[in-house]
Image (cartoon, rainbow, N blue to C red):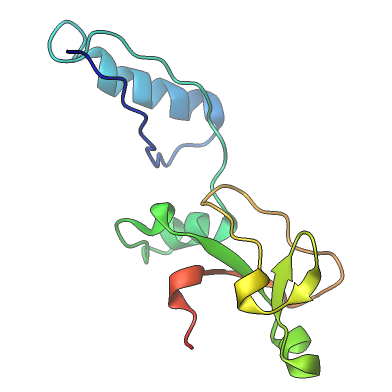
Length: 123
């Protein structure tokens, strides 16, 4: 039986064309063996935290598979609700919008909003 596998691959390249090319180069060498055929459907920039961690060599394997939330210390200091929800605005962690590893636009109404790994939040 044949299977279709959807995979995410984090590639450090200067633009989307080079990133797509790297993936094709890697997979093309296996076509005809266990890999029958392949295609790339989407290439998207990673979030700034992942990009920065690659640049400063603090990236840990698996970071790009994590869930991310937006947090603001200033908003949390106001009323304890320092997490961002695309639907509710500033709210509690349970209602915060959870993002994947792709590029995220931070809310414009906060000058200290940062993207953090959801599983790194201390309860």
